[in-house]
Image 1 (spheres, rainbow, N blue to C red):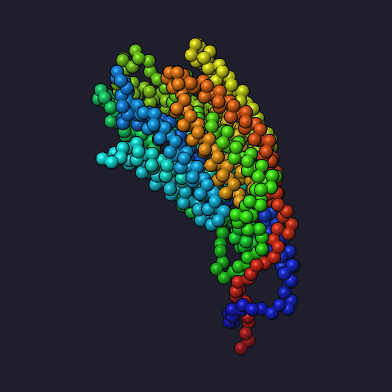
Image 2 (spheres, rainbow, N blue to C red):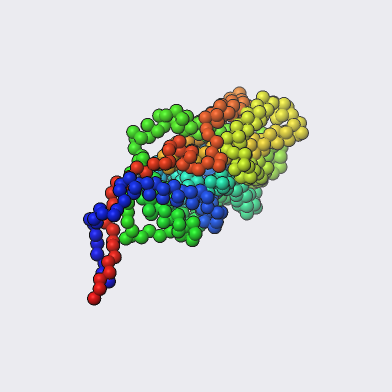
Length: 561
């Protein structure tokens, strides 16, 4: 037997170009149908776990700063005139809180585009490496003659944010492109729900490290809090541990068949991938296989303008982007300033008389303990249940009804919290303050059983493969722009008229943005029960128009002796 390489085969007996195109077009649709109708398997579970660990890490890294900022103030902040505990000034506090969302905005745009250009697999894991390095570097920050520790921390939080930003479009698109149609919403929700556990873990780790150093903090010097320096470094640094565990699995996840078919335009390899990983969970690339590039719509600037220039497509991107922007105004406005809200409801601060009894170290310990416990309560009472109620109903009620319901209820809740703030908090009894706490927890609940979940899911479904990650990145970046606006506005406005005096008006502004989200929701489609190709607004029959070229292939011939 001998092996001979053939590049120019006779055309006799071969299918015509139109017949070949028809065959490839049918094979593409058959492979996609196999993915869309696949039974739930260990491969789906593995995909959710690998993507979900990233979101756990993202939320941990983002929301630890709400607690860590207080710790940094005790160690590196200046004591107010007349004595008291050290605090970061407005610019320092704003810098450490807003650096990550700004980095996330850039990461979502950059990684979203790159995932459509070079592939989901090639970029997946790279963003996690950036998160791990940035998180570990934060824990090792120190001051120098030319730069303060706060400045160094801001830089590393920005870099970490770039990695976090990359995780949004990549995890969303990879999960949606591997998921069967009937369970796609639940798979994407299960991935995103790890944010709730990340926030919970941040508060739990904060409580553990504060308790671990309780005696040292209470018996510390009369000024400064050197042992608290250990606490914030451990709190932030431990955030890289789950990322390290998940890194190998991210680097070894297969490329999605939709990318291989529609962007690399290699239908044969994609069909083989589907047959392999849907049964074994593994994939194999044959270096000697025929590589046939098909003639299909290709991403380009002119094609992008042509596609999104049509109102039926552009309106969806506008709807997903603005809905995420409006939601994150409130979500991050509250999430990154939970210590302010906790102080208002009696969890974050200690009265002057109690502070004198406890002493300097005792007051620091009690403040940190209260803030940690308060964040645990908020996570358990509102955040985590909201995600998992969404999980239960996302594929039965649908995305659009849940998002609409969430925005409507949030508008009412923030109106009650804002316009009723004085009666509930300033002049209220302990009973009315309990009502405010309940409303705050309900706001967390309906953010997650509502637009916080659906704004992540819909952009990962509603666009064609060649622009799916890019469009998700644009939508997510719009959300982070809202987070930045909320944080800057909160920091600059909250003390107008006195300490935390303007908080009630900020809550009223949140209500306004929730109301605008109702109208942007009207622009998005219902994606429940539809395949990704049906949602792309592109004709699928004849999507492949022909074969652009065929590379050399190996043909075996039998020789007789």
